[in-house]
Amino acid sequence: MSLLRSQRGSTLVESVVAIGLASVIVSAIVGMVVSAIASSTAAKSRTTATRYAEEGLEVARLTRDKNSWASFYPTYVNASVWHIGTNNTLVTSTDTGITSVYTREIRFTNASSPTTNNDRVQVDVQVKWIDKGKNEVVQLVSYLTKWAP
Image 1: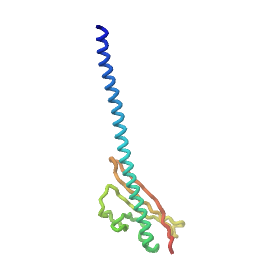
Image 2 (image 1 turned 135 degrees about the vertical axis):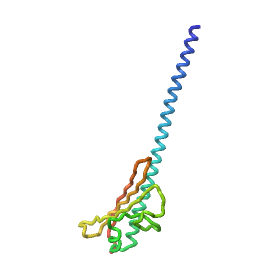
Image 3 (image 1 turned 90 degrees about the horizontal axis):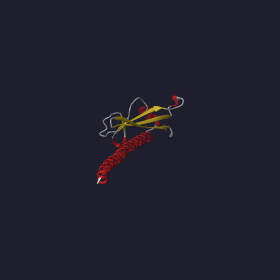
Image 4 (image 1 turned 45 degrees about the vertical axis):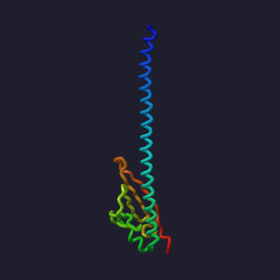
């Protein structure tokens, strides 16, 4: 009879330990899933921002190709911050008619050596956004040269 009483108590203790262990394992799995989802969302945002920055570089090249160097250089290589407007044109206005969580800025600076040559331009494209209250930035840099006479 005393053997049956001691087994009842141990079954209860075993059940409590098993439930506690199961809850720890489930909590760890849920934590890993939440972390994976957050990481995936951040990677998607960064990929989108990189694509927008690449598009900014392409519009800068297109602008250079559409204009002669003599008109491109003095117009775009200055202290202005450029944005992409309609029809893939560069504009200084921030009101481009596109609403997005991303902000894209394009800057042109003289990268000639010596600087008086005015034959090489550095293009900096920055895409900014806020992710979970933290400011994020993707920046791409390229160079444009005076390749056509």
